[in-house]
Length: 143
Image (cartoon, rainbow, N blue to C red; front, side, top):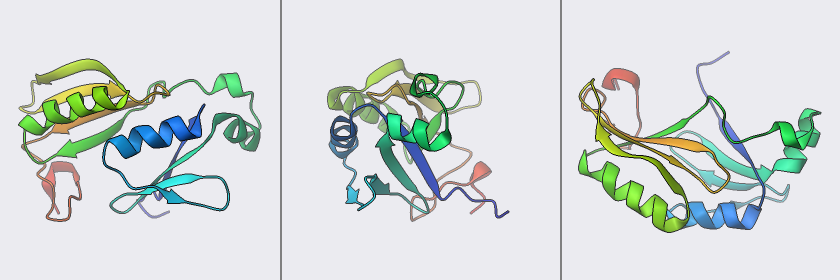
């Protein structure tokens, strides 16, 4: 298996509300004939899919799909001050700031936010892992 994640699918309660949230962050929607709303990222795609349909596909009860549990998605930024700017934009778009931007022991700055469906994201600036020119992230900045 290649070291790659191709598609991240979020089960959401309201497709249009979820899509509008990510569009308010500046992302561009890609429609799909199979009912998925997708956002192409750098090297991956984020897909929105009705939570009930995702549960049916998985063969589990819809109520077992709750938020993101112990999983977070991360969005790294080029500059420290961008963490606060994006957290504010997140809040304005209808998300929730769970933990305000703050400096962390390893020298970076992070904030925790949640989208309208409770998916938790970490917004981060990491001075030890600068982003590539195309915005790509690699652990320890070894691009």
